[in-house]
Image 1 (tube, rainbow, N blue to C red):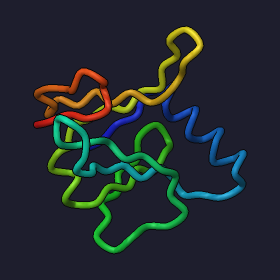
Image 2 (spheres, rainbow, N blue to C red):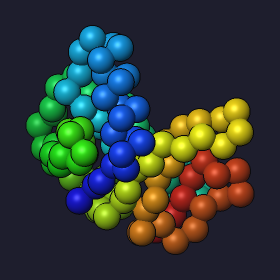
Image 3 (cartoon, helix red, strand yellow):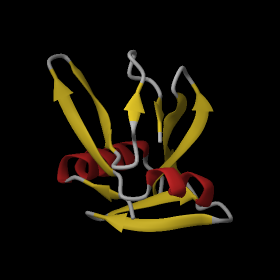
Length: 106
């Protein structure tokens, strides 16, 4: 299961309204970086075959079955730190993160 905090859900809903289209958020992982894997996040306009669907705080979350094994239990937050803002993955499966913060391993 994947969950979104109130802040993350609100940000996604506002962005989809601004875009004028979209059904939710697509999450995944890809192989890259010095630690092995990186998070993928994009707005989804339609479900793909094999997608797992969750709903959290009124937002539909789509994830492919392969990525779900690495992301199950993750909470997605939207944080502001100084002048920077962005999504933060709170993933209980994450064992280590690279020094630059771009990739992780499980």
